[in-house]
Length: 203
Image 1 (cartoon, one colour):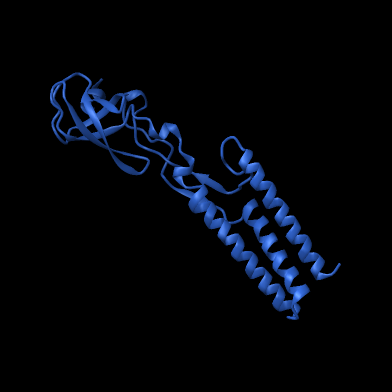
Image 2: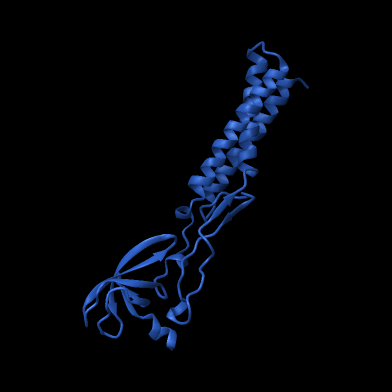
């Protein structure tokens, strides 16, 4: 077996695995690419399940880590490494060691591109939204616009690592002053129905 044959086999294997991964990922009902080892995702919001008790953690911190050594990056490395090495051995006169170094460097560049794409795009928090992270019932916030009796105001709360605002009404039709800490007990048609946190905590 010559070095050109070796490079060609690496290219074929890498290209085939990449193609199979793409097709399998497109058919995956969850929208995730399969066999991506070393991927860990966490996202969360502070809320009280069912609107009672003390605030609890959702799904951990909004952090994520992606291993650079996974099925996709290895497949892309083989494809770029093999393709570059084959072209160099067949259509250039550079020495073997230099060709090997160039092929390895090109393979690493290709794998790095895929790694960055996986880490920043496909595996971003927005790409893996969990409906439980956006559950409004039980969310704790503060009144930013005073709520009058039977009137509508506004609350500010944190959810999935970002600050949000929402129209709010008192569940008991009582006035709630600005900066009061409240809990969402019901959410209907874009309006959060709230109660004071000390009332819920006392119950």
